[in-house]
Length: 175
Image (tube, rainbow, N blue to C red; front, side, top):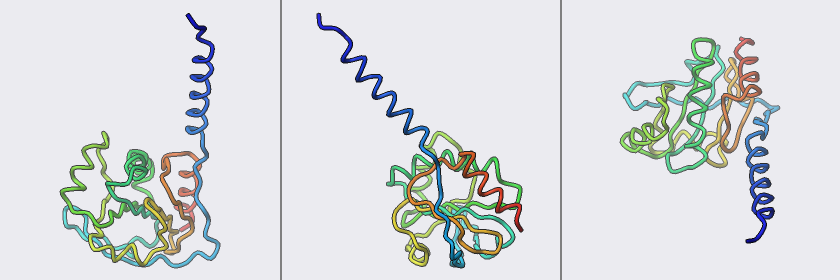
């Protein structure tokens, strides 16, 4: 029988990689020129209209995503946790689904294992995403109370990360 040392070493290295991945700092890129956020009016799955410009005075997280996108799928539970921590204050969150129908989105929401209660908006013809500087899915933007884009995050995030929540709360406090 061969010694188990090589297996133990490989297993230990794999655990170290997982630990490093879990401790990856969650960051957003500051946009120093703070461009005005392009306005939009979109319906949610209940056909309720949401207009971005009506959220002036609040910090807003706008997330562009699709159900076929693995990082988009992974970040949804953390978005719900962030929503639960920040809602009720000067905060709004919009998850803008790009190009999919209500049935596809509805089926996806049950697969997350978490009830998603923040607004999921439908950009079925992809007109809204074209007006924003989106480079990949998911791409998220944080808008200040004056309606300017102050942060961008390309790729999935853990939105309930204390650092990200702190940055959003600072904007919420600066009406």
